[in-house]
Amino acid sequence: MNGPEENIKNKLGLVHVYTGNGKGKTTACLGLAFRASGRGLRVVMLQFLKPANSYGEHLASEMIPNFTMEPMGADHMVGREVTREEDLELTRRGLERAEEVLTSGDYDMVILDEINNSMSFGLLTPGDLIGILERRAPNTEVVLSGRGVPQEIIDYADLVTEMRLVKHPYDRGVKARKGIEY
View 1 (spheres, rainbow, N blue to C red):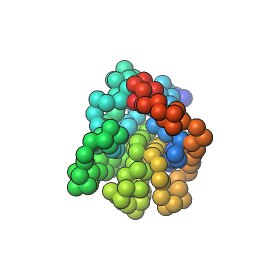
View 2: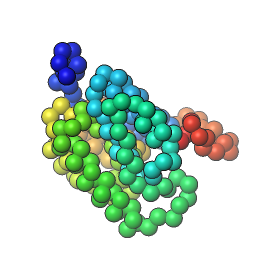
View 3: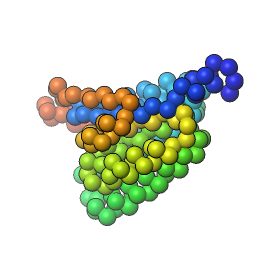
View 4: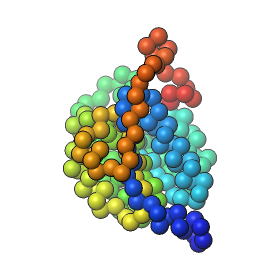
């Protein structure tokens, strides 16, 4: 890639965090992915704690050029029984894959969706993640999402946005809806 788009890549390399109890963390990540892919940047989104083929974004990602999505977990949102050992193994594999994509130089933006939840559940440590982030390829923008981000990650990041819950239809008994929540 030559010209103005090459200049875009030279300015990449920050770490973003989207956290909080409010809705919109994954949606914010997807907005960034959409914007970046529109500029010709190569984007990969690894989804921790989310299974394959269960979310609308999986279907849409197949239609967006330069965008790859890889679910890396088991489904906790619908009450599936998952053992801690299974969660630990899936997280370990997810972290290995994260290291591969972050260090490869093949992607301009790497999104680790729900990785903050993985840390808050004790499935990996902030030190594990920071160690990998320190080894990422130059000019790789990184986005971390999920509730319960540890202070070490907040301190490490360049941008931290907290989505604050003010009101949610779930409180009135409205269940998660296809195309809106998943």
